[in-house]
Structures are given as structure tokens and as C-alpha cells.
Image (cartoon, rainbow, N blue to C red; front, side):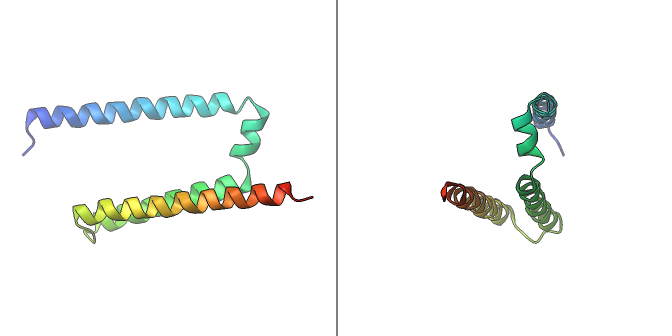
Length: 103
């Protein structure tokens, strides 16, 4: 049921994502040589935020796999969840900066 053009587009998208993942891993390895990056990456808040991001993403993908969402509902739910997650992350960062600025 795949047309050859669509099949090739899927291959190109996967190849681009693999190249992107390769550069992310190389950047992570390079950043581990710098002390500021190590303290940021291995901080408790960063790890908690990363786990929350993966939990939200895995739940949305699980719901999609179980056909709980239609395609449009899936797009809206992903947008809303990532919007809420980004808002929470920015709120936490702002709150921690306010706590640091107090004498």
C-alpha cells in the first residue's frame, strides 16, 4: 500500500533523525568535558524534568498506539502536554532564580 515516493520519504525522514541523534550524542559527549555542563546535566532538577518529559511522551504514544486518540486529537494532546510541560519548566526556573536572588 506504500507508494515508492512515500516509502522513500520515510527513509529520508528516518535518516535525518538518525543524523540528528548522532550529533546530539556527540554534543553530549563533548559537553561532559566541561564542568558547567556536567553540573547542569547531572543535577537532580534536570534529571527529574527529563524523566517527566519521557513519561509524558511515552503515555501519549501509548494512547496513540491503543487508538484512544484520533489523528487530530493526538496532535492537539501533544501540543497541550508539551505546552504545559514547558510552562512548568519555565516556572520552576523562574522560581529558582528568585530564590537565588534573595539575600
